[in-house]
Amino acid sequence: MPVVLRSGGLRYYFYSNEGRPPEPPHIHIRGNGCDAKVWIAPDIQIADSYGFNPRELSAILRTVANNRDLILKAWHDHFGNQRPFR
Image (cartoon, rainbow, N blue to C red; front, side):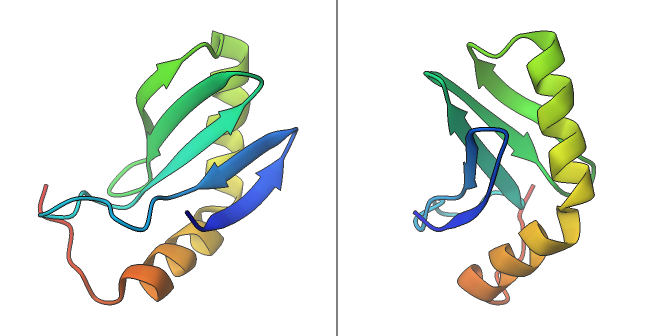
C-alpha cells in the first residue's frame, strides 16, 4: 500500500492490487477514522467517502488537485503502462 503523501493528518495512498481490470487512476485517503476514494482521471472527483464532512472533502479535493501530477506519477511508476478501462 504505497503512501504517496501525507497532509493535514491524512494519508493519501493506493493499493498495490487495484483489481482486474484496473480502475482508472485514483487515490485513497484515510485519517481520523474516515475513508475516501478520489478519481484523479479524467476529472478529479469523489468516488466514495465515509465519515468525512463536506468541508473536509473540499480540502481533500484541493489537496489532490494541488498534487495531481505527483499522484499520477506515483500511480504510473507503480502500475507501469496499465491503461484505465473505465
